[in-house]
Length: 286
Image (cartoon, rainbow, N blue to C red):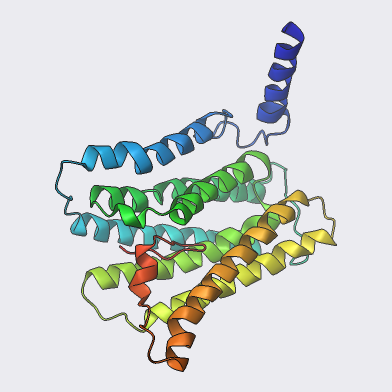
């Protein structure tokens, strides 16, 4: 028993301290191995159990103005991180074939690690999308894919900040913040009753381009070794291919098939929003 406990402690220490990047260990929610996983578990419990139970005998909250302010803050935050990614990496000395993580204490390397942390915090803020659904009693929009995407992005970005903040995966944040800035602009304009009907098809196309680019970008790790963990490709390529197929099916059902078969009812873009498919793979309704 003592030997087993000693192995567990050593394994925890290895994962939490030995493998971790010392430059980010003191950042909020990064230093302890249990903080973020515990937060994810609570998020899943709240949006599926605790939140619906709390709202069971209550009227839906009217959050239109709050959500509009939230959309504006999301636009600003995503554009800021997009700017940082361009300025610190993609417009400077980024290697498009395979970019290693700079683990030094050079000012630029520290700035990049902080940028990854900002992105991680923003993915937690994204959970408000789901919380707003719950408080407005739109539980049907809290789908498996919606929740899976939201906690998966937090987990992935947390791993990035804790172990390799920088390098090849920066494209995910670059594309994701760009797409998010457009999507939250769409949600904001829609909430203001401004006609954005023509945006829906283009946003779906933009999402599909994003998934294709990410799958292609991560595939380079399979034949190029620059010191960046190659196991990341084994996780991210299937994920992005899956999302590309999912949105390709939606695109076909919504924009291609109705044109060929007029007798079939046309699927509205709001139907996909109602399923709670959001950002980096999933559109959602505000």
